Length: 263
Ligand SMILES: [Zn+2]
Image (cartoon, rainbow, N blue to C red):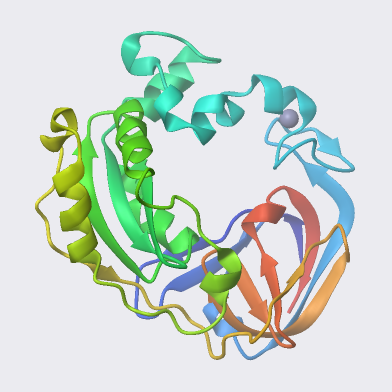
């Protein structure tokens, strides 16, 4: 048995994707757990990134204080076009924001439940794509900071979604999309100010997940509704564990929960 604070799963790009389950200081290869039975047991408490323990989070994985004050929860996290570090303006914590925002970013297209546009720090691209359960990914633009990536995304959102329908993403084998054709279309309609950031790279990355069987209809499990989740693990995709009986569990959404893992 392992006990500790649940973190989002770590992943490595391979065929199929390799997943490690992170609980406290323990790192457990979860591809090896597929087809085996496991139990996740919430102990009724959560720990915020500030270290304080609560019965539940205020919003997302934050306590009240952190949600309203921490740079990790500032409005520009959810709306990157609101970033201001490159303009020399502090939002909540200038040092943190400079480090986070003043780095090369990509604008990309992925096929999750259909094609969507997104942004990520350059160093995070594959992790980001795996976390969202993308089956295909292609780079569109590279910019020097997060605000610019947000502005390009904002423009592309007029024609493309920026959301994943996670139920669709988890049900059935992903269908291939002509990603390069869509990249070409959106590249041609991009404002002239942004065109200089376009990437000519035509590589479409394919991502294969360790899923033995996709659920037919999806039953989403959460600790709030049921503190113990037990069953046979039949696959992992994105940040979801797929259990038998059509059950799925979003690991990332439970970041900070204090749990036992029994394998
Ligand atoms: Zn906190």
